[in-house]
Length: 193
Image (cartoon, rainbow, N blue to C red; front, side):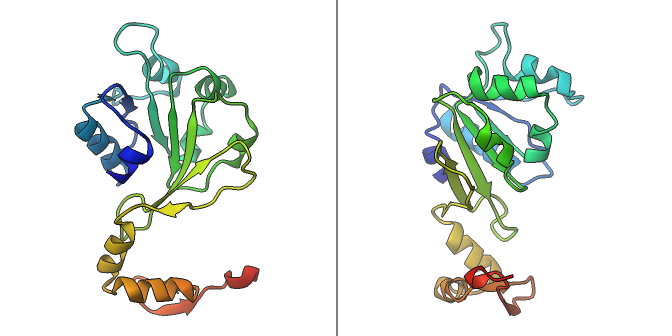
């Protein structure tokens, strides 16, 4: 619900279901489509990069092009410069969401349509999907993890077996948590390495 609201998804949207089912965020694409009634475009199993524009932005009447694309940066950066430029400047895409890897900062320098909103999504294993979102603006020179999505903090605390107040205290003190819940000082606190 949080992402559906953040992205202002409606039944008029078209989602490209390009995330493998083995990657938890694929569920985001499925549930947003199910809860809004929008189209979910499922590519053929033998996806090839040359099919990019034909599938994502067809010139036929199957659909008017995707409006939502969630992808990992490494896949996105394999596309040709022409395909990337088309997506950013001329396509029907209005939401481009990156996650699962470091944000492709190259995107910050490229021209893009005013109607395209770009997001950096971040998630931790305990949440099993996205936990925070940051909307990139024209003025951003760096990309942040963003604000916690509603409910993500509570889910993470429960999955780690700590209270939300304990998790909040650990975060406030700059501590990191491992799978066995041992606490280590954050080596990046106060800008130090």
